[in-house]
Image (cartoon, rainbow, N blue to C red; front, side, top):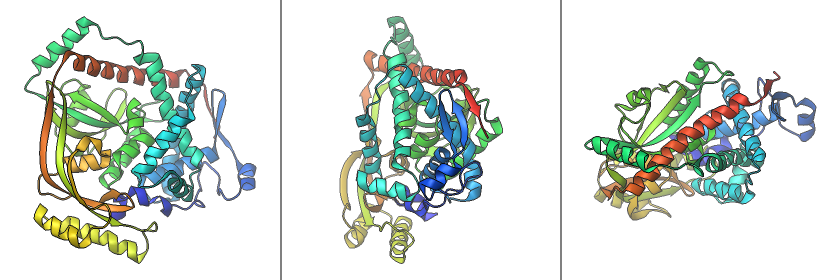
Length: 430
């Protein structure tokens, strides 16, 4: 259980030699062996998807989810990962059709950002994912598909979308009518219904993702891997959404969810299933708000191999600190004794600027409470919240216009993506 909290350092556990798939090749050792056994699993318009493509993407999904790389797990993952691969192909094809230039520098920047989030430089992260049986190009291709959908949305939807003065006035009136209620900053994973996958399969996938999140998996990383929403590229961050503005089924699913929590069951809508987390809550009628926390951190370095006795001892120390230390004065004493590089008083920090997994965890803590062990540069860390306050900005007409446009763009982007999938030629070959 403890290892699940350290997604940045578990990638190496999954061996590159373990690539067996019921629908794919039996081994990935050697280019000649691959070439002699490659099978086409699907034709997507003018492109193909092979069992090798699928095997690598399953490795990537397992790496991110921090689950055991077993034959049964691969069998369960195969249909949903193939479905996501198909959608990525379609998005890249649409970007090419529209003659959109998805520059490699965009992919480079995103890859570097992900590397930093895992406490590594680019070279170190590339080595790590290769050890997990994931070619660097597999991850870059997935990143490129996410960027493609963002660029398509900007070009085909956002660029020409205008909010009229009449629509703006109606939205301001709606906000005024709702004063006294609240809005929530949401994270989402969206799994749509499709002709290729039954509803029970989509629901099963949603429960699997919820189980992984409850075991400590990072919401943002799972959203990037599995979500079909336009927000996947930003870790599922949907932004601020007022109560009463969502699909009634979604509203019902969020009724008892407090900041720092996720839905314990997938929420069914007419389009598919959602997994939703609440980062924060604020009164309606504000343009933006920030939760500012005074943080202290104890960081402890970890070796790359978490199975060694030294790694296990250090993980146990972090867990012990998390379970036993209470109060900032006591935390400072423990920090002086055990803290390594990266430890100390971090001062006041806007929690929204932290990675989603850390932000969600710290948002749920009260003053004087300590976090569970979390990933940190070069190791793991626990955080103590020694102060907390909410900063709220006033609402302006321009803020309302921007927010209304973002909401409409997200809705239209989901429809555009669904239309691309519906109109595509998809031929399954297995």
